[in-house]
Image (cartoon, rainbow, N blue to C red):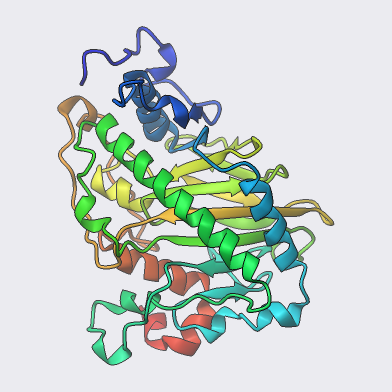
Length: 357
């Protein structure tokens, strides 16, 4: 490790055996020193937050003035439209799992979630079905988005946001790799211009009988880094590795909630963990809005284990082993597994062969 890095004796919160009691907050504007190099103290805090909690919040990430408010405003206006208008963008129209899904249509752990959402990803031509080989069914995920033709400001605001998130994700991933002793470009080959990021606009509601208190059930994310913009309602809770208690992620106006996905857990043999989290539905009559962005590599990326410095490798916990939900080193296969389970109606309509797996 760099000799200038902060030690646990200098800051007890950074000790390996310290038990997290809150979700850390980092200011991304402090990442770079005046000479452009990375701030060692920031890297220490980043590594500790990523290793011990797997969740943190960031401020100072470069959003334009009014950008957050504009995104939330247009998101709320979209979900306030008549149900028929939203269903014209139904994700069952799309073999790529893009578009609108109604309240309780998405499922986590087999139970319906009390949210509606609009899923979107890079706008690319679909891969013809006859060109997709066995074992590469993840190419079904590539294709066009669905946007309301009479509301162009929705696509403009959403895609403008993802452009910012792509830059933030790249900066954070590079910093995190340096913080764990790897070159910042270690994953450059799989994060080229064909990277398959995912995003969604989400609206949570209370009082959905079949969902109960489940806004989204407990789960881990299957990409590299998730960047979540949430409003001030709250409800997101995380359970760090080895803990029984849930930590609330208290909303900070305009902040991004950051968590790590299964690809980084696989790559680091569990030194970095895809932390389990859930969202509690809001009280009846209360609306909660969020915009998650999943910073992800190419669909055909296969993630191998990295060689960590010995002092970090000694604290690797091994990748999670759940036979009901195995982690796959193929990013595309991991992503397709997640979508197929979360949206069974789309899978049954377009890809019934996946249901038997």
